[in-house]
Amino acid sequence: MYRGCKVNYSTVSDNELIGYIIGKPINEEAHNYFFNTRCTRFLDYIATKIAGEECAEDILGEFYEFISQDDWAILRKYRSDNNASLNTYLSTCAVHYFLKKKRIDGRLSTVSLDSQEITDQLELFAADEENNELPVWQAYERLNERDRQLLQSLVLEDKSTLEAADEIWKYVRSSEKDWKKLPQKRVQNTISMMKHRALFMLTEELRSQMAD
Image (cartoon, rainbow, N blue to C red):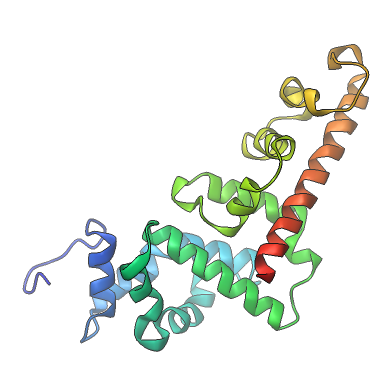
């Protein structure tokens, strides 16, 4: 592949990049780009939010072992039958692997899937459309319309409860249809409770997905 000339690995197709990674002898430049540039963003997230480490470098060795096992079977599988982008595919595989490892090790507790972590996952992955096939986003898509709207307004768009009230109040079982006629504190407390309930439902969806 392009022997004898300098390759800009950031511009090659996903399948071409995989070819450089799994090829022999090892292409040091391709490996450096792949592990230290291409995968850094989602590995940083996994390191800090799932693995309990400080940065991507702390789990890079384990990720390399995972991704290269069985003669790069995970990457070969992508080349044969995956329609998602490489980043989406790798992120999904890595998140599943480290979450499952944490659960098997007995270290997965409610802290691992608390409201703040779920919020962080939504904010991170929603910012990049490539990541819409990751577990947390798939769980989000399975929620009912009310819970999706709550998380869309209060988490993804980072609105305050009062800023989001016009969009959300129609889902509240209240005899008063105009939230502006009610005390602001009551409106805030009602919507805040609904947000926590929506996050709980998202957590349960994600737990169910992890158990599959």
